[in-house]
Image 1 (tube, rainbow, N blue to C red):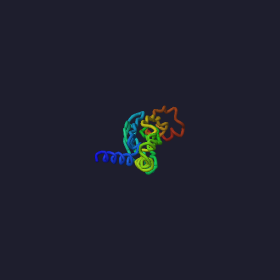
Image 2 (image 1 turned 120 degrees about the horizontal axis):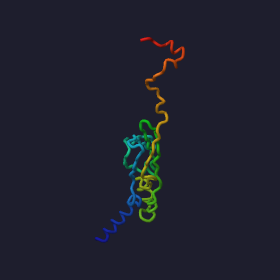
Image 3 (image 1 turned 45 degrees about the vertical axis):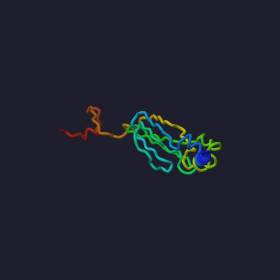
Image 4 (image 1 turned 90 degrees about the vertical axis):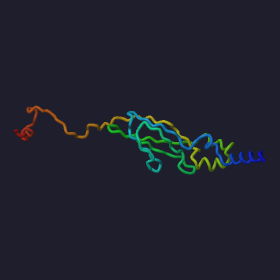
Length: 165
C-alpha cells in the first residue's frame, strides 16, 4: 500500500509538472538604473499598457509570458528634466530548461504547463544601466533676462523707441 502510494504520487508529480516551471521561474527580477539617478521610468507591455511607474534605481519583477506560447515584451521609458528621454526594450528568449521537459516534464510540461505559465521564456537582460544625454535644446526657450546695452550701440530705430524717465 505504501509503495503504491509513493508510485502514484511520483507519477502525478511527473505528469503535472514541467521542467522549466520547476527549475526556473515565470517572473524575472530586473534592476533598472540611470545616470543621472532618479530618472522617471515608465514600463509598458506589448499592448502599450503601463504596468509600472517610478524612479531609478528600481528593482522589479516582470512576467516572462503574455499568454499561451507568447513571450512578453516591455518598453522602459526614461525621462528627466533637462535630459533627452530614452526608450529601451525588454525582451525575453526561450529558456533552456524548457527542453528538460523531454526528459522530466513530458508532453504536459512541454505543451501545457510551461507555455501557459510563461516559464518557457527567460529575460535576455537582468539589468539596465542607461545614461541619459543632456538635452541640446536647453536654453533655446526664450526666458526673460536682463541685458545691459550701451546707448551708442543702439540703432536709430531703437533709439527712437526709447522713453525718457
